[in-house]
Amino acid sequence: MRVFPCAGLLSLLMLFLVGCSSSDNMSSEASTSGSAFTASSLYGKYPQRQIVKSARLSLEAKQPDALAQQVRTIIAREQGVIDSSSSYSGDSISIDAKVPQEKLELVVEELARAGKLVSKSINTKDVTDEMIDVEARLNNLIALREKYRALLTKAADVKDALAVESELNRIQTEIDSLQGRIKSLKSQVAYSSLDIHINKQKQYGPVGYVTNGLYRGLKLLFVIE
Image 1 (cartoon, rainbow, N blue to C red):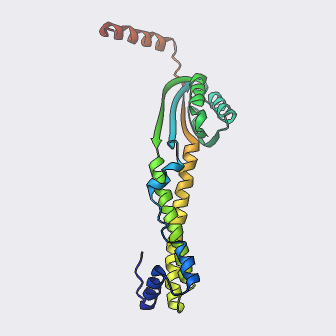
Image 2 (image 1 turned 30 degrees about the vertical axis):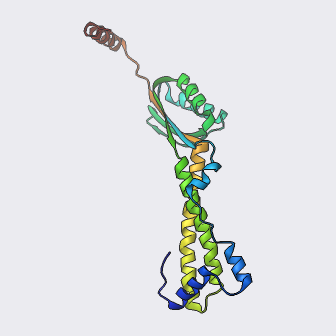
Image 3 (image 1 turned 90 degrees about the vertical axis):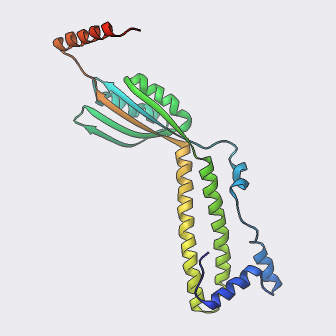
């Protein structure tokens, strides 16, 4: 908690924390005491681990544009959304999308069958502890904000009131930041990100097929299974 330079406000803060002589005031202030939240007290809120999943796929196709359209159709059919899409000379297309987490593996398998699969990976990250920690900090700040709001009504002069309002603004900024982080984590858990790269499949001419065949034949001479 920030220390205020104003002696009057310091006295007011001490009076607020220990209670005042009025029984009504003491009752209302007591209701906000003992409201500290710890991470351990919130574990019961998340009986299942909160997992963020993401996937990357690299595909090849003779017609990248046609495969890209098929990719969009598959994602839309599984209630996913396209975040962005970019094309490079028609030979390379990148698509960033999100799909419901429970459908990620299904979508990945469908996409892998739609084109020639070069590579795929699915990554996971457990964010349960982070969500619990952020929520505990948020609850404590909300409780602190209510105490400062009550303290504001007891400010003796304008200088004290301005000091309390400044602290309230700081606390509110932290609250907004933590609420945004929780919202982002919940969104990442609910929807998995999907990074898809489509490249034009190489097409060999007559000489290319012969050369490629010779290369494979020579390679077998030096490789023992």
